[in-house]
Amino acid sequence: MSQTKGLRRKGRILAFQVLYGISFVPPHGGWTCERIYNQSPAVTRETDEDLILYARELLLSIWNKLEELDEIITKYSKHWKIERIAKAELAILRLSVYELLYKADIPLKVGINEGIELAKKFGDDNSRNFINGILDAVARDVDSGKFPITKKF
Image (cartoon, rainbow, N blue to C red; front, side, top):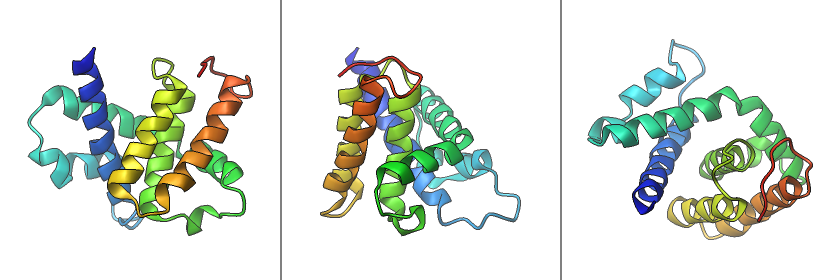
């Protein structure tokens, strides 16, 4: 179990790094999400194949739901337009909200905690509270049945 937990945590970090990096790539020029992932220095330095595959699957799944995730983040970030959210926080929120809504095997508390850990590591002093507030609100609505996934705290 702890091996899986470690793989997931490292995979989240790797997926976050690429997701964050994508926010600096112009939307033209043939750069697909997969191409960016495959050429990312964080990925090319990694030697654990399971980790590379887990992070790749996570990133591509997030990328395929990006519009929906951004709508949810906008709804829960009250008065913050998506363009105003710092790139690191937005990448963390996209990843974490995806896990809350689409990863049935990740409990709500774990999803929130992992988002906060990413915020501590990659965000600024305000990131943790901002991310915690949004993730907590999404998780409460998942718990109360407002999303089509069954999870409990």
